[in-house]
Image 1: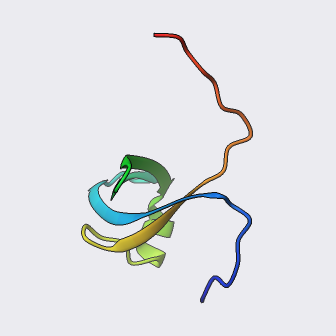
Image 2 (image 1 turned 135 degrees about the horizontal axis):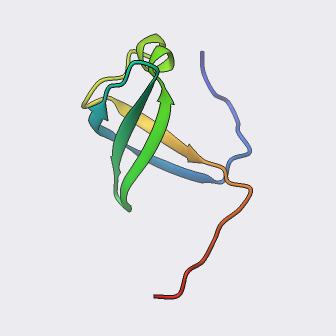
Length: 71
């Protein structure tokens, strides 16, 4: 499968740095030039995509709400 176009504007290219495996969901940490992006995906998807540490990936961020906190 090849993605020819996508409407998600927030895209971060990077490499998988760490995977925390779980029985149902797994956490995937992606190292990008802008910092670490974390994603929680199903463990089934992790296996279906053959994701492992060092794999080049594209993290796509689409949020319907972004909150701001003053620090």
